[in-house]
Length: 175
Image 1: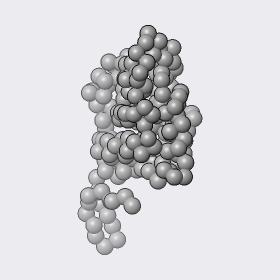
Image 2: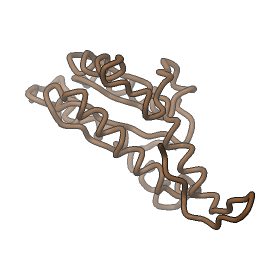
Image 3: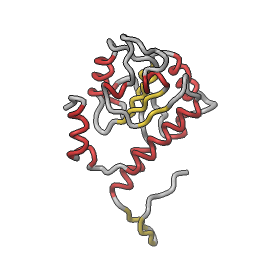
């Protein structure tokens, strides 16, 4: 059960801040877009299955369309040729959008320190949560989603239009 945000309680009413209500709603209705390329994708499948059930955290609907998702989960080895495609998928997502890098390959290139493998997806798109492991256990993926939920709950409604956020996107040449 999700605890209600701080507010004023009275007979027949509850008043709180809009930021808190929007953050609570966004955090508990994240729609993931899995961008899985290797073994971490198998662990994600286990995370979505009945034993770990990511749907308990509001991620019931897995979306394979970037326009209908707000949480990009990048799992597995990303080659330098796939970097522009990953960036295009990210840019097609509507704001607000969040990114989780799942596994050592997505976080840092993993054991593949070669000319063809991207050494971390944060070279191409901004990342909100890193989930380490090779491959990470489903419990770690669930923990990463929970960390993202905490970040989303505390995020201001106006953060995405702030100069700091615009500067971050500009550092990645994203408009």
